[in-house]
Amino acid sequence: LLGFLAVPACMAADAAGAEKTITDGFARSVTIPAEPKEVICSGSGCLRYLTYLGAQDLVVGVDSIEKENQKMDARGYAHLNPQFKDLPLIGEFRGKDDPEKIIEISPELIFKIGTSGAAEGDELSAKTGIPVVLVPYGSLVSDEEQAKMVATLRLMGDITGKSERAEELISYIEETIADLKARTADIPEAEQKTAYVGGVSYAGAHGIISTEPAYPPFLWTNV
Image: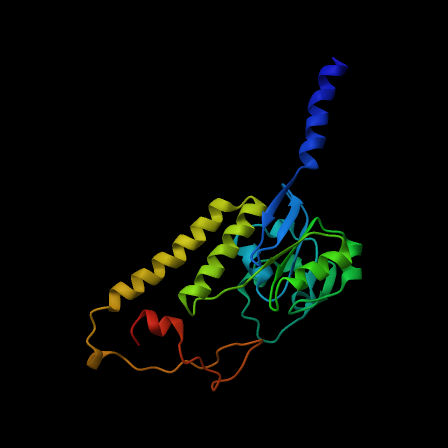
């Protein structure tokens, strides 16, 4: 009986220590836990994506922006996850990591939004001894940027066991854009509306004169 019981215990230990090798968003080969249970997110938008995927319960540390009380805070994901404020600090916001703080928390995996190339992932991993999955944030401003966003959602979803949710998000985004384009495709140019968008955020909130010439929702609706 004791021998029988020992087999599942060994199997569980093997599963807990299982690893896999992935290629991240900057073509880096990274060996990571097969099923990470404790992760952190570094860089603007990284924690937002993880929350969209429904994997926020894996987060064990946050950057400074999650701990600040802001007068105007448009971050819906943060309002829905007030527990983030109570998690340990990993560094300053916008990816200014503190390796010593990260080592103290000792997550199994670091997701990081890349801004300057593959080297920043290698450097953080070397300093902490923790695997870093470096990904682009992407955006909706062009097909190329949208492809980056989709790839990031898929990769983060695969790593966290949320692939089904990732596909749900991607389908929603693509179907919504297609619907908006279809609704307005036949409007004659002479009847198309003109509009101005102000208060566009970039590295923080800005006033009415902060705009975006190629504002994606205007492009999708022929405004």
